[in-house]
Length: 461
Image 1 (cartoon, one colour):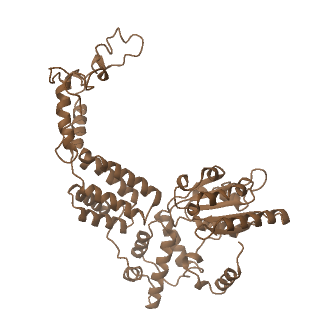
Image 2 (spheres, helix red, strand yellow; image 1 turned 180 degrees about the horizontal axis):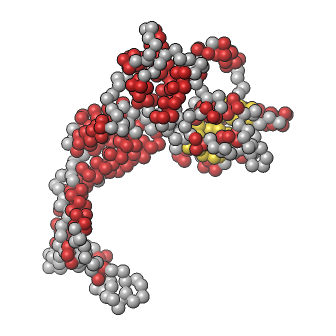
Image 3 (cartoon, helix red, strand yellow; image 1 turned 120 degrees about the horizontal axis):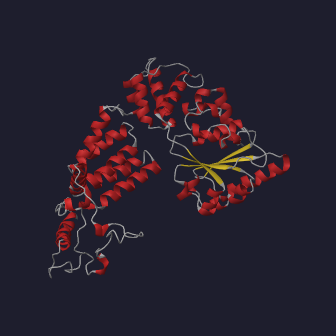
């Protein structure tokens, strides 16, 4: 790191008075062994290990890396650990405030350091997705020639936000969301460690669980909330961070919600039943309860996708597209922003016209199959592309629909045991009303009917 005058003064003050720094800063790991989570990136010989000198050097030196993950998963922490552990020159830039001028200055300094006294440079660039294409282009020569070893961090999908040449010259390391156990271990360490709270307070189980719900896998958020609650408890002369004190300190009530128990399923069920019942306000209430309780946003998105097919179906075929798009967005952005995406999908699904015709259709078809109502595939529908198929009568008599006006051929498609069996009975709700009109005409033509008594009737809509 190359601190300026003000940074150096701040670091000196923190050394003399550690309590002046936020708890999240004081609890930053000082080595890779102290990092919680991300164990898939910290194995012996992994790129991050090699950056701090473990197995580094030679023609196969460590490559530049892109760290991609949601907020609070340790991207900045890993860069900080590298800065503390490496013997290399370490420079930090933020894409929010830096531009091409600053990048070029770092690169020029790195070349002078390497040529003058053989010192390698590690450049940590936070929020790289905020750099324009031209700004990212300015990094390419330095990365390609290894004038610097780049550690870049982003919360956005790098395949969309980072230029391809830079991606191809770097290792992409994906950081996983921290588990509750990861955050729990960090909270307990912060309570006990001298550089943390030094045992000044205790954290009962119900308060710890509430902190985990508040954190939502974000270590920084967990430590910030813990610090606020511990300060409130000590100010009141209490040696325990009670749940009421914690709720007051962070202005977040403890939601009665067990992510592994009845509340998890009861509230999820209420959300989907409210969507099914078109009560948009109730649906938003249950969605908010799940979000506030720290429910996995991917679980919520999966439930909405199921509802789009189960309860809406072809009454509004765009409902499934909306739900799938929401699930993809949630996977890329995570909380807190994912709350907006889930709310948008919930409102759209709740207000969409409803139909369970598709649900009933596939259910009835599967019931027949389970009951043994299947039978052989009609001979004219069987595969006729192999030698000898013609002698067996396969594909003989099959009418190619595209050779007929309207593209509907009057021939039997179902097995004999199910000829004429109807599964799909469309409703007249929303866009499915059009399907209801079409399906009757199509079934009539398949049966040999039509204006002229054959399958050559009107062209299909």
